Length: 288
Image (cartoon, rainbow, N blue to C red; front, side, top):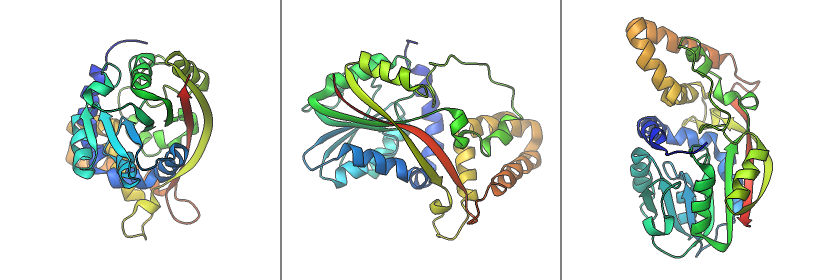
């Protein structure tokens, strides 16, 4: 698939508001993923680090804390503003990595490390995007990213959310290579894209647990309210509210939200918390 990312820019400008509002929950739930990326990247003082699809700045904060020069790029103005507030010591650029000269929009020497946490699955032309990234990387650079495996392996895509999608008009089928969370679920395609863009990749499975109970700020909750807030903040949650609240009315919408809450409560583990298994690919690559 080729083309521009205008649709993604529009989507993430809107949905980004919900993600920024729930950044603490996302950071807690994805803490094992962040740790895996940072371990593989081995950031040190003096590194110049590029975070692709930097979101609200989780990896930028870690890079800055390590003494690295941190640069983030994101297509969403909402995310960029949030990252700039959160990590004032980083350079955060509003740009599309697919069609931008990254050393022009963020002047400086080539990047020693390139990292991404679930930020590279939305390119209309991923070969072009990773080629741009390769062009901005040093010859001895290291690329470390995490992207989702299949939806079937990841109940995070359906738990709570499917209560809403059952009430929505069915979405049409999309090509398997369409931009979206699981566009790189097939590891062969992932390796092919990276190799074509000038990278020599190693792709390994990363299995983890999204601990929503651990995201409760009191330390004593079950994580249901945290997961519910995330469900409503996603594109599916926003679409459901836009479509269904006018149809159901305020009371009907509130009742539907209660159905989501009840569904989440029914999935608490034997410790009384909401913990959802996750399945991703951990990719490390060097220039090929």
